[in-house]
Length: 64
Image 1 (tube, rainbow, N blue to C red):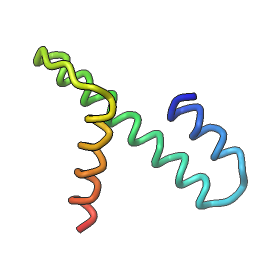
Image 2 (cartoon, one colour):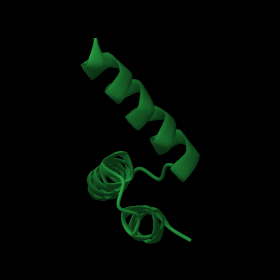
Image 3 (cartoon, one colour):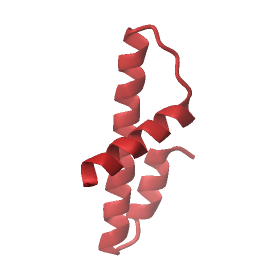
Image 4 (cartoon, rainbow, N blue to C red):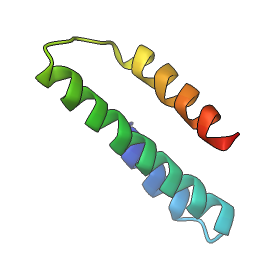
């Protein structure tokens, strides 16, 4: 199951928090896809785990 499929399952429930969580998962998946493309254009191969960590760090920094 990928992030988009998980977001679909979460959003099926009627709770507003669950819909927000689904939207957040989609945004994160989109950001990771863009990062993959940018790094690919630069000829850099990076693992998904590393990208996930980078996105989490960027989110923490933006929340401050």
